[in-house]
Image 1 (cartoon, one colour):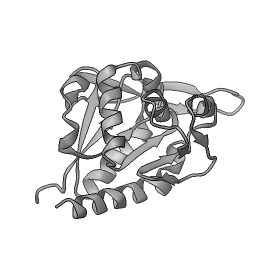
Image 2 (spheres, helix red, strand yellow):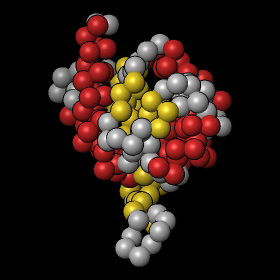
Image 3 (cartoon, rainbow, N blue to C red):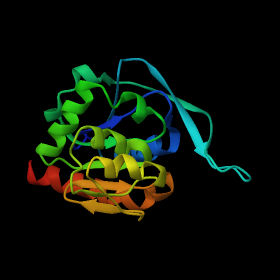
Length: 192
């Protein structure tokens, strides 16, 4: 096996959405990168499945797979990573106040590394204060979280604004994850 092109952070917590997380995780490996899972502490995290079932008007949730944290937020050295991915699910609501997470989120933005967000993942860059004037996709129920922090909600499967790539839900993964990985490739090539 050849050396990976670089490492890429995937931000999770308990109740991270399974497909939101695993689709980019395996696409990164396929693209020659080493995905590194980061979370509040180094342990196993329970992911969930989210879907609006027939007859329901809200999302139903049940347990999905679990995933191990490779490096806790407090130990992340952002300069070691080519990019970052903010997974969705309920986790962002609970982890978005972590100062370490907010600090390295700002670092990725300020240093123009390729960033990606899906669904509720938007709550982290919004809380970090980097979305002012930024066009992003997110699930409709997070439109307020984005807009109250100065972002611009766009209801499309792939929204690219500067070095942020976003989709509404995991149903959009086939639209925005590929362009984000292409941006990682371009960043790695430019910084080799």
